[in-house]
Image 1 (cartoon, rainbow, N blue to C red):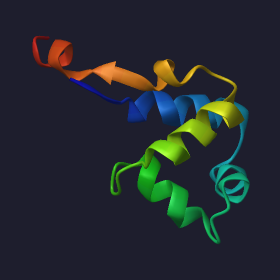
Image 2: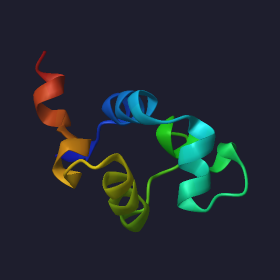
Image 3: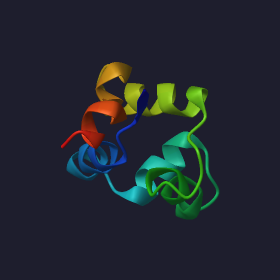
Length: 73
């Protein structure tokens, strides 16, 4: 089953911009809105994930990981 790779998402974002900038670009009033998504405290809606992939200039597929393969390690 595919799920969002939160570690990769955070790494990609940190290499390009601050948490505050990402939050602003997504339209959040405070950095907490995006922080909760990136940290896994809230689920990332598909439309927000699509915006994130555009902002980070990466294909949306790169933001997913197959968690079934992770369980085998």
